[in-house]
Length: 170
Image 1 (cartoon, helix red, strand yellow):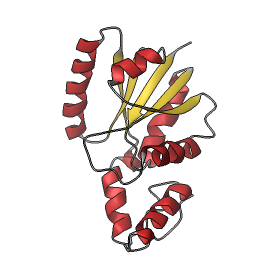
Image 2: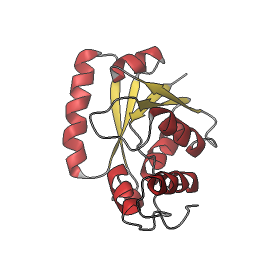
Image 3: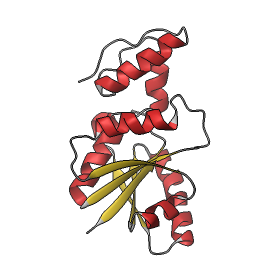
């Protein structure tokens, strides 16, 4: 059985993430989406919320599971029997970072490779930061995230006295 891990903070999950997850699911027998517990960035949603939002988003993929993780990604991959780490690339700048991470992970565990998938053109502009910024400004994010994610953002922003998110997703 071929197994790959797709790690990330997914804060929040958006259609670019789902594009990569869908394509990885078509390439591997099993894809384990790892939601990293403590990335070096400010988080909008808790670990449990990010895991839940991702599980709902990929519920239709029968060969995809979503689990939280901490520690090294190569250790997470090894624990799940994966020999491949999936990463998404949007813009040339992403390649520099992902190349460096791939080499580092390869040094830590030569048995695990990194496979970079180019995000579909229609999602190349998307990032979780952009989604949150647009939502904070009251913009319509319905073409960027699934409905349940837009609703979660709306609830979170209303709870903090920030503008409401327009739209609902598909």
